[in-house]
Amino acid sequence: MRIAVLKESAPGETRVAATPETVKKIAALGHTVTIQTGAGAAASYPDALYSSAGAEIAPDGGVGSADLVVKVRRPTDAEMGGMKAGAGLVTLLEPYGDRAALEAVAKAKIVGFAMEFIPRISRAQSMDALSSQSNLAGYRAVIEGAALYGRAFPMMMTAAGTVAAAKVFVMGVGVAGLQAIATARRLGAVVSATDVRPATKEQVASLGAKFVAVEDEEFKQAETAAGYAKAMSAEYQAKQAALITEHIAKQDIVITTALIPGRAAPVLVTEAQAKSMRPGSVIVDLAVAQGGNCPLSKPDELVEEGGVKIMGFTNLPARLPADASSLYAKNFLALLPLLADKDSKAFAPAWDDEIVKGALVSKDGALVHPHFAPASAA
Image 1 (tube, one colour):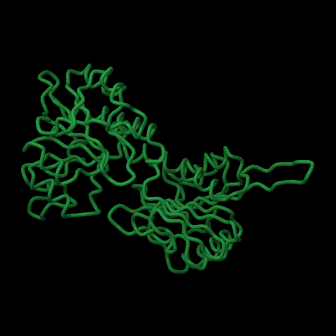
Image 2 (cartoon, helix red, strand yellow; image 1 turned 30 degrees about the horizontal axis):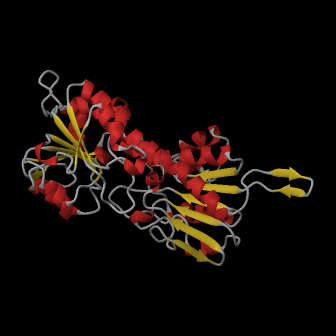
Image 3 (cartoon, one colour; image 1 turned 30 degrees about the vertical axis):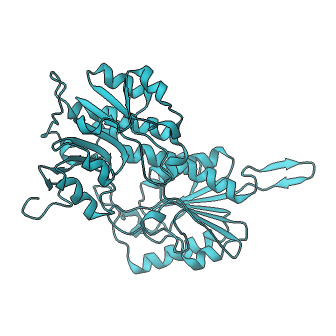
């Protein structure tokens, strides 16, 4: 199988879908890899390293003859136009953002796989690009917040006086939130966190942070057997809002991480709550690309309200290009055996495998994923 790794063209995107390490392993599996010229330069992977690992280097990445094209972000129309019909595509398709773009993938008769749809099962953990990238985003959110804060994180006792530890509040305890908690703790901050799922309380405590929530009987029953949050009563929501409002006013840095696939991000920090924070405080909004967890945040812009700095980041993993690329490339490497025939090495996805079925978005000129296919096809 001929695999093409293309250079990312999205503004500010520094990642690449393969590294010299994974290229060497892919070649050892019997596949040919072509890297588009300069594809890894922004991630500190020059073409020479890819050549040494066994890859071919081509100005167009060899896209026209590729059986499988691999990218980090959704391909452009020009890139799809260069692909042959029936070729495979593995990428973060951003499937909920642009229906027309998905239909363009299908119209080009590309067999499209969205890394976002890799099932959250134990066998697929090594392929889970959302988790690998969110982990880095949570780490980087703290680093960016610390830079904006302009004060020290740990408590320092000096002859000139004591520097108080920064207070960091993490809202949303998923992969990014947990890493943000751990990173802020390592930097010496006093960390607290909140989430609507009761099960996260133990995770927060295990990282040395304080869990903030109204823990009444309704809260204890707020999670379904499948691990999803239940809708809370208006009475509970009012009590929780009052507690969070009081807590936010005392914080130095608030990091919000709540995202819901296919829906606008929930508001976690209201305009009034943001303005209640002390001058010099910071809000880092990781959900700004889906509308934001704070109404004041703007994509990749620093907003100041009453001395409070509010920063919305749309692509924090791209600020750690070498590590983000390495993890994403390993996610693809783990998926690759399910996309190739074991003996002939040809592009032949294991159509009956639940991972392949879960990630498959387009095939034979149509959208086939249940979220996007016509009702009859689904």
